Length: 73
Image (cartoon, rainbow, N blue to C red; front, side, top):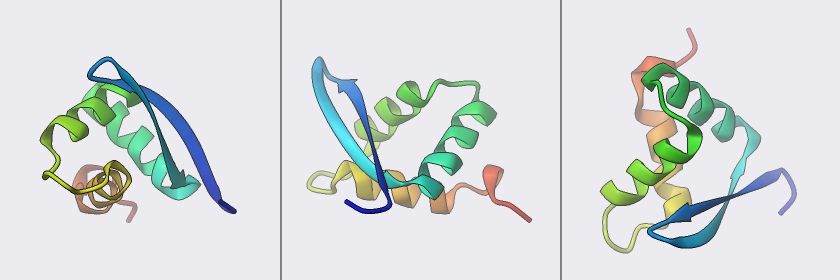
């Protein structure tokens, strides 16, 4: 897991961990801030909206890459 940072969340009453690169966590933290959410709230919303069978880590990476509100110029 070199280069990955693991964070734990409670989703649907169950604890789960997600390992992402630090760059993705930085974008997700900025996105949560822009939306006025905590990181936990952002992850919970992404989990609720993700496609069946898609891993949560993949969903979060796509969210980080696709949201224009936090892209650096």
